Length: 379
Length: 79
Image (cartoon, rainbow over all chains, first blue to last red; front, side, top):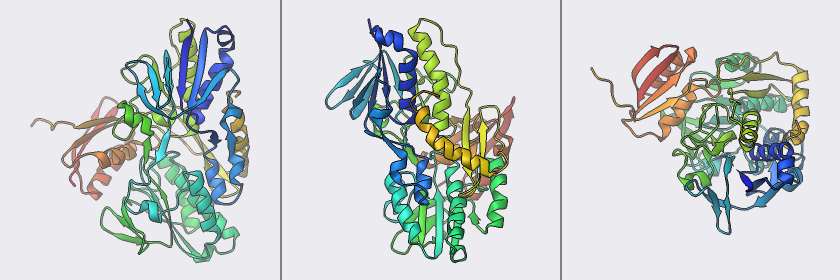
């Protein structure tokens, strides 16, 4: 009987997993022993790190968008549908028009900025966590001629380094436009330093000082008054802005919240080594959808796929699962529009930023193109 | 004296980015006033940072203790 592997979610994690499975299981798929189905609710695939470059008008939005069907291997049965519920008792996904039974399920439903998480956020704040937001921010920055730009950060959010990166890139952007002296850049962070990771905070602090970027710590945004252009924090203080850029708290996908398998914010309790949903032997979770206390980032999904895919293939072949995820994550850290650092870390090795260089910025630019091979499961 | 009942325990061991304190900030937002949140962390920096954040944000540090090679830190949400 055909074994059915269903992948839910067509972002980085889901597309990569489906493609890797298709490439590595081509014989059993050809013999109808295995079927790989990818169910996605989006026909467009967006490379989300591109939002930073869109915001600074470095690349047009189309540069970071492909059709999902052009990325997916011919051995994958690609379906576009809105799954509303995961029925883990009956081993099937349910949408308004169909149901998708599975033997093994990979949940790759991602995370989403919640613009309703803070009163006034939707009306007053720009963002760089959506394609539409990045385009609007690009236009707002392009017409900005001076004043205070306030950046706020809420948790959890994907790509924990991005708020620092956009701040450092923005400083360079206005310097290049010759109006840096007219722009006050205020970066804020909820805890006692400018990044939760001490090595990253130490990496960024000298740049902040040298480039006159103001940092405010213990900044926990509670509400925004769009009329008065004021951000109000937990301690009751008011912070005026001319342009507000916010990183909203993220939530899991609605399908997770609807299925009762996630925590209160829609992230799924997941075993940190096997990537199985807690309490399940045939549901795996990958990428932003997990509740693991590690970075929600594309590289996390990539490294997790190197555990999840071999283990699924082992199961198909009747072999015990032997791969364990070690918590590996890798991130570039843009320092400006022309240089960058990078970090790698795992559950037992803290990160140490590499020396900032133009070469690493160039490498990031190259990766932005290599991504399309990576998501096809080729690399 | 017996320890208070922990409402939610977050295993943030192995969390370097965003880190145990950010896990706490996230968890405390959705908790109820009076709830006790316990964080497990193997990060020495967080063992220092969490009490500082808790004091600044006017919550209550219930305990902070080292168990083998990791820290157990509990916070009561006060407002």
